[in-house]
Length: 489
Ligand code: ADP
Image 1 (cartoon, rainbow, N blue to C red):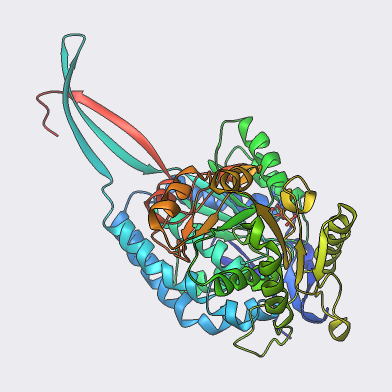
Image 2: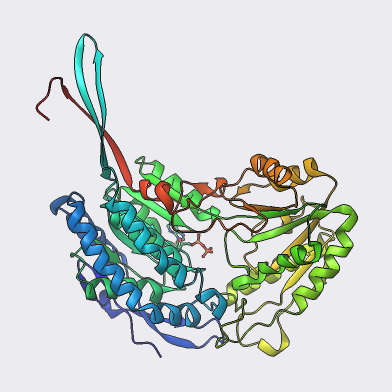
């Protein structure tokens, strides 16, 4: 059992009001792994007030050198606790071994130094020269300034990645933060809070309010006039609610939402079998990734061949062992998510797609929240299983006629988060990449995911970018300052 976790408010690790806690459930077998602080409305108010004070009354936003030095200490403490993040990814999130070494733990920890280097070298002030307007000469400067108090609201699928990718760049930009982790994964968030105290981060710059509550605390955080910007990752439905609420006071929003990403396999691909088998990567972390490839587009003439290859690949996936460093697939996060995925599988069957393999709860893993690796073939892009985000280990195979048809199908989606193409002809692949309406795109397995690369979506996949220069600048405002020329400044 893990020890009870605390909230972080104004530099102190505290119990929630009335010492409320709630059980944290292991997705592997439904058992309790410990209890988390169940933050309420009062805790939230205090967290926001502390973040506001730290922003308004201290030099956190303005003393870049001191702030980055403080964050470097925090980074060292975070990295020194790598094993604790990894253990939580496994025990709280249900992340299997092969994901712990990537987005579930090591990748985000490995991105922090790059973000801090970027912030350290950032050009906070630009001189845009002199201009004459209305017969009067002015010298102008453009200042970049922290946007203010940021509400960071995060989901349960890769909480270490998303918590770290919001908190560190926001703090590096000079913002202060109230982090509200998902109810399913409080401990990953609480660990960031505990380690902030250990690292001596100034009081109030980071506040962590964990809560069993699914929506009320988050909604109150978003609606609070003391919050200047909201950085949210989660479902498109919740993203729309947040955007509507934030619009009431024109608060800045960064939204990283759902996806239904397509990979196009062209007929000239070098190793058809190997490339097609890569479609089984939908099972990575049981498909609980917003940018996961969930639609595989194959030439109509080779559909059945592709399906036979995929069937074998899906049926050879070993999963369900929390101790294996090799496995790519664990459990779904909760029984609710398991039921949601099973409902989509039922919908796919009703819609007339061919269920090739999987589709149920594996008989030997009934106590966790598992769903079998599931493959649908003969899918058309108008089916709900091709349009809606399932967030489970479910791949749909869609046949296409030619390049134009493939691009049309890939783009025929409310989402625009990611995509891929495979071809032995780079010109042809690039032509397709240019026509696809997504925020990230992979050619022949190229990896866009990195700390210095912007990540985010077109269309209903969101607004803004995480990581990279663009991600850092989400947390900045721009001020143009003019003074008479010649000026002493
Ligand atoms: P899911 O349905 O997959 O749990 P959500 O998008 O609902 O995804 O949740 C992502 C995060 O948003 C969680 O931290 C959740 O508590 C929070 N959340 C849910 N509803 C709201 C809301 N109305 N306003 C703000 N945050 C919310």
